[in-house]
Image 1: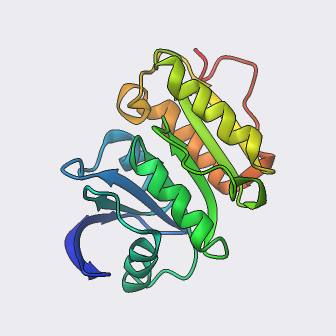
Image 2: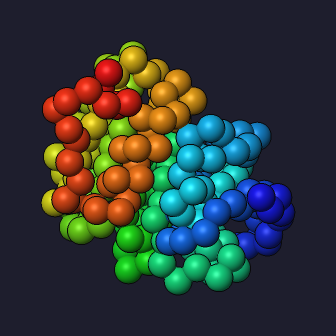
Length: 193
């Protein structure tokens, strides 16, 4: 694992990097940068880069510059909680660079005008123990996007990757690898015990 700092758009950003393969950038709130069990599982399938997004939220162009400094032309993108708004902004700002987008317990979706034109495969994840507001945002986001999907992870709160790391890694990994062709089995899995 690499623990480093980079400069982009006048901001100094901390990042962690682990694994090999298709790049997966995971945006997290300030002070939350650490490799979680879910991210460790994902780093077995992807080149995982956990990037800190300090408050106030960074501009999408700053995140794009940061990915360029990391040598990424295209990448998958995950935004957790309030960083989901930043991740959406990046997908809207540079859709040609974002292969697929995952919003973990989105705290906001911002202006809805551009979402209907965003063709990026997008998955909004919610825990069944999360607030109704998050579920409503996730459903709204998925409904507005032509390639939007929503999945509820059983027995998880807003920190799905912490509450249910195996389930998070399974559904996120499957979605990122197969985009809109991902399938949730109806038989018992780590997502639906």
